[in-house]
Amino acid sequence: MTNVTGTDMRDPNMTDPDMRDPNVTDTGLRDTAVADRAERPEQVGDRPDRTPDHTLAAVWHGCDRIALETVPVPSLGPGEVLVRVRLATVCGSDRHTVTGRRVQPCPSVLGHETVGEIVAFGEGGAHAVDGRELRLGARIIWSVTLPCGHCDRCTAGNTAKCRTVRKAGHEAWDSPWGLSGGYARHVLLPAGMPIAVVEDALPDALAAPAACATATVMAVTERATPMAGKRVVVVGAGMLGLTAVAAAASAGAASVTAVDPDAERRDLARKFGATEVEPAVPDTEPFDVLLEFSGSSTALQAGLRTLDVQGIAVLAGAVLPDAPVAVAPEAVVRGHLSMVGVHNYEPRHLTAALDFLARTRDRYPWQDLVADPVPLEEIGSLLLTPPGTKPRYSVAPR
Ligand SMILES: [Zn+2]
Ligand SMILES: [Zn+2]
Image 1 (cartoon, rainbow, N blue to C red):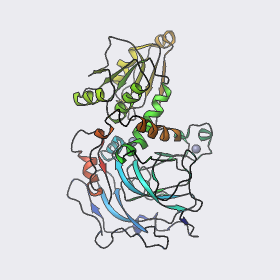
Image 2 (cartoon, rainbow, N blue to C red; image 1 turned 90 degrees about the horizontal axis):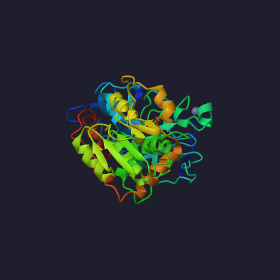
Image 3 (cartoon, rainbow, N blue to C red; image 1 turned 120 degrees about the vertical axis):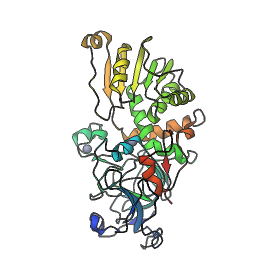
């Protein structure tokens, strides 16, 4: 293990945007080039421990402005991990960020579905969420959320809602965690980041989405467990919905109805274990479990009406404002109904996600959900004008 133990743990320039390489290249919708690339290929070997002192990052500057920039890699503090990115997939929430539908600090480096290899440790090294000591070269994924570990919510087991939570791919460049996002050659993982090791047989294209989509679905389906023998309806057949369809089918649901207005997605849902597919929530039969990923209040309203006695609705898609839904209290009382929300997930869901994908690798066509990677230079166009209808597009920084 390489321990990086410098006394000056952080490069003081790192949090000063003015000290970044001024040679900035816009990567939006137009042709892209890399700032200063010819002069500065990957600067591995700049430090005695052979960790890079600079890396390349796609920095989001607000609206549709994304620029590839050569940026400093800070010296690692105790417990920190430096990762070389192998593959980063584009989650829908990053699209919402660059199109202005959600608010996020900027400039920042986006990307929170990432798989990479460990290239350096800070003093003391780090451990995976299953307790394993992490080693150089390990292929890993990490959580979207970085909890403090000691507030009342963390100690109660709800680290996703830590009072001072920080998030991968969501932190301002001008903050203590500038290199937080996967749209870069390297990501810095602060001490305490939940990390899971990817088994050799699991391709990068399956592992990267596990860090957001699959792990979130593990948290969602946990709330509806057990699903064996249940009639399950999954609303929204994007990346999360399709994963939930597969999870319900794998858990032995009596039926899995996938709802999506898009015919192509409905066809995909059948390949992931849906027994029925519908363009809208059918009102002809009751369901025991409603898993909501569309974020549509109209769809949720229709779904709530179909819940049978002891039915449960788990909501995960409504991460943006939409119209309120009407709930009939009498129906909740007489029907013993439940409605719960899930946002992000706990560290255990990272390993659950990887285990689930490993278990079902040959059963469902996971690889079909992720487009072949393009260079980091093209991240701007992937975010702003995705070339097709794949649930996930990806970049592989070189
Ligand atoms: Zn996400
Ligand atoms: Zn906390």
